[in-house]
Image (tube, rainbow, N blue to C red; front, side):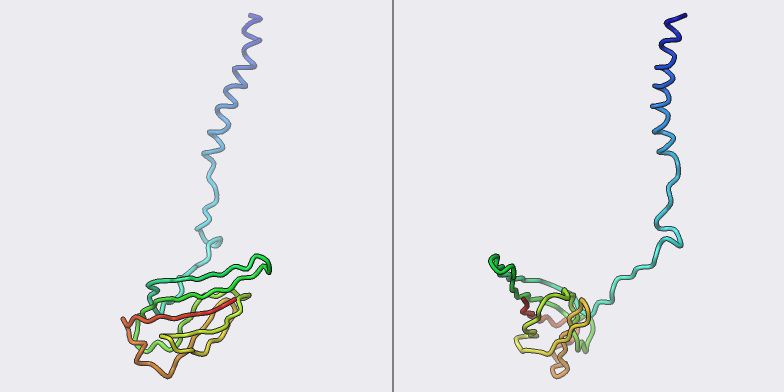
Length: 137
């Protein structure tokens, strides 16, 4: 009888340990995709197909700086593309932008870089492949 009372607390403790995680795992959690916690997110509209990216990066460890050139090979998805919009960090200093080897004007809007070329619309027909180059530091 004394042995039973000595083992009984250990057996009870053992069952509590086994049962507790199972009960916690079965409690329902909040669904992060249910309204109103979820917010709608849409992919940005695409004006071109990005075919290839070539990056040439020069790092200057002594000055904690870097310079680079990125060449994107793109193909417009629609005729009449007049502006190429790229993601570009706000702290990058853009030195030059080129489209098909010709220097073009560019503007910054937050984390976006917009390269415009209204003069050569024939270049931007759907399916045409050309290269766009950005030099930055």
